[in-house]
Length: 504
Image (cartoon, rainbow, N blue to C red):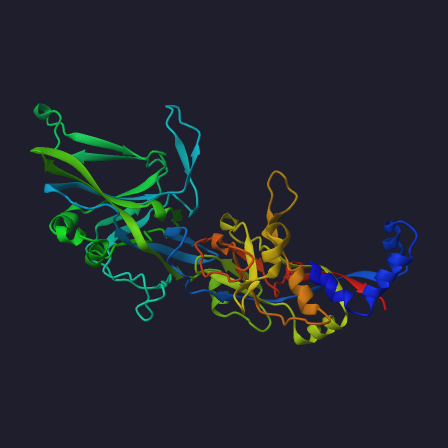
């Protein structure tokens, strides 16, 4: 960027030298650069230094106002176990009136998967592949839905002018009698149709055949369909019509749902990213209209508060001893970087001694990169596509990211040259502007502690003025990197600087 050039041209009269040289040259402009180099005015060099890097556990993240929510159980040897549950208010946007003599046929909680349509099967029916799931989808886990008994405020009770933040380690109370409990739940990519029995609607009384509604989404995408205890809703919803006079009255009466995932016999199950923005609870019921039993529905949406809750357990994992005892002085041999309230790596680029020496060199910084090598013993099945480096002290994006964009800033996985079976090798991040401003001869900035995290969609800045890194993370992927103390010397975290030195 311009700042790199300006900082150098300020020094030693170089600006005047270049101006006079250009005015006095009679040859074509291409010859000017050649003459300068031939006259040994500039020398190019490369500087490489190791960087102190160590781990930091992140115990919690913001849990509400997320774009996506996690549900499920996942465990691996690298990072241990994470259980992800969801708490949510319910609300409605149309008047709820169950009418005359209502009776509930079924109550269904419907949560869409993220899925991609695949080729049709032999009978012409569509197949789907579930997206955004890590782990073994064939391993079952426990899934329980309960009545939430914690009121979810939207505003901070201490400061009602501010919205209330929830965090992933918050605790909630719930009714001990569940509305649903399944000890053998697993994702189901063919769950696209709901059949609702209507016992009181009998199209053929002589044969005792009652009506069955076949309900299918317009886009036919698969969803989790959870049947809830209809007796609970009969006793609490049908028998209390006054609670539906307003959404505020309803939320006060029914705080919402607690959707809890916990491990079964095998905790190495799966963790799903789900579309809770389109989730609904629907009561299918029958009432009397014009002396005739009639099929009805009442739909409830997920309200203004939906929160993720994470339960983390590093016990027995590769991460446990290092996460719990990071070496903040000399650095760690491995870096465990995982999203979803997992862990990050912290970096100290310079010591006071080498910073003073580097500034005295009066270099023009052409390029500066941090290189993080992937530990090939890591579980590469959950490797994140991209990592983000940011200013940890100020919780701000680096100007390299804001102004240069992904293509220049980097952070994506880089692979080896094997076209048939490429192996992820490293992540490289360009911090040329940041380093230039630190090593500037005049008006230098002081270095900050940097942090490396799994990139989350919420990390995209809204504009050039959006410096702050939001405290969101619903990407549960993770990777082990070589730290600066790894025994594999060639794979240690490196700061690589290429520079131009001006010969006085």
